[in-house]
Length: 500
Image (tube, rainbow, N blue to C red):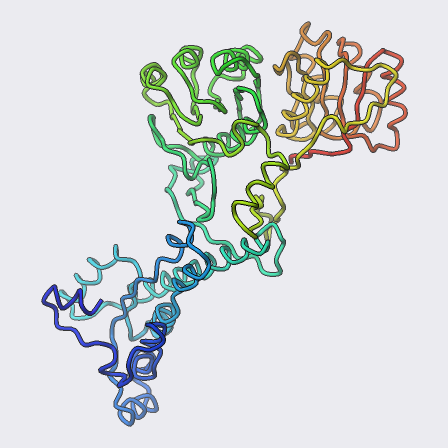
């Protein structure tokens, strides 16, 4: 820094001049000295402080401008642990905190965007006013708190103490990506923040190729769509409305997948969001050309797709980059083992955070690797391989619908989704009503067990051929008996997927 200032023709004194002590330990210790911190922390109107300043020949320091070592940039670029540690700034945060504590007398600047404002006040008034010094002090403590949280998060992830390890003290660091026009409603302010350690395809790292800025609701719905489309191995398309899947389908390619997802519920997709797990080509784009959509997200968009969708002025197009689990779908155990091998000791666990009155709830994301071959057949009727495939498809979709949730599906396409109901049988009735005559011969998935056999009865009346559910109710035997009476196959997964 001193050399840069000299080259710019600015008078500069190296820090060893006031300290009388050389820089040591390869630069680890420079400013940690009473001559520096005494000059910053001295209160100008305290007689005792004035005596100490005079006795020890301290020079009061009026302004501290510090840019910290770029720890996040270095560590995030995959640096070795030893290199990352050398980019943990010690003296810088100490200077910032000292100046912020004594902001009544000292100006602290941590954001270069603040330089013009500070310079203007100095040139105009000869000093920075107290209100500005207070705001800069608040920003300074926020800056150092974030810096330490980033370091804590990095070190914690290396030893399996990331947020999902449920630490005694929850320390999170997020960087604001954008201010949003408003939140869920126009009277609510909102912003979007990025986790500095986010890996793989995400909304925080996506490139917006077209359309107007994303809204709070767009981001919530897009996240729900991305989480669901990542479940599938084969080409898939997911349509989401109000964070609830309204049309999900697989196909030979993205065009067939999105056409089937649209046809699953051509009414609800209006004003929705569509996600793909394959690049969008021109054929897929043409399938969406006549639908009003808010957002389309995919690993990439081919040039022909951009020409077609680019005619929709406001449609937001998000390029995610390769999905972490593609090809291969889902968060499989094999994939996780591979990732752990690549990242050493780090335990890369996704987590979910939700605000409640007076605190937050934290949990691991529902990324359980499941194998339908481990499901338990509990009925006399045995489903064929194609039916099991449809059950596995429906089971992955129902995991992402709001509880209580029921999904009716056939041929890797949703026919009806009942989500967010206060009782399971009403969720089933809605899903079956949406399916209509298509329900005959289709399958049904439930995110939690059946407390009564009534859901089986309404499924049987609609012609459902097979059911998958977690099991575990004290009345399981009644539901099994009802399935046997109607010739319906039922499998228990042993796993519940509540999504409140």
